Amino acid sequence: MLRVLITGPPGVGKTTLIKRVVDHARSVGVSVYGFITTEVREGGSRVGFKIVDVSSGREAWLAHVSLFKGGPMVGKYNVNLRAMEDVGIPAIRASRPGSLLVVDEIGKMELMHEGFLRALEEVVDNVHFLGTIYMAYRSNERLLAFVNRYGFKVIELTKVNRDQVFAQLSRVLGSELSKRQ
Image (cartoon, rainbow, N blue to C red; front, side, top):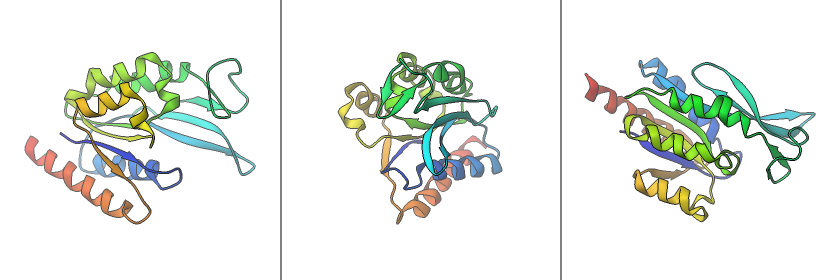
């Protein structure tokens, strides 16, 4: 089973890589579940993030600079925990054995929801798992234990290696598919 987490600095192409792998997986007949987190800009400035279910297209605001006041915050962003309940966790739980589960990302905002990591643990043994993870994940004991317990390979993405990482993930998916034949 594929168990890979991509880390790296903001803007290096983690979400773009995930989207490329999703497109490739679908092109070779793999069912894909999970979610992608996209940044939202207004007038050239980032104002927040939306979470998008890759299977249904359903989306919700995960965080915003001015919406959801009074709730938890990460940096300048107010986090909308309902987005995990309404979109993120259902997208994870929708995954089927042998499918590809993508989780972009396992980060501070997502981890604020108590049920997020539990939902991942419920399905991880039965799916191919590709996610992104924030660089300081080692400082979160519960998250580090999750990464180690399930044997994830963590790859640091750079502008230099991103095409090679895509090729490597595509090959691994292809070899996993051939095992199902």
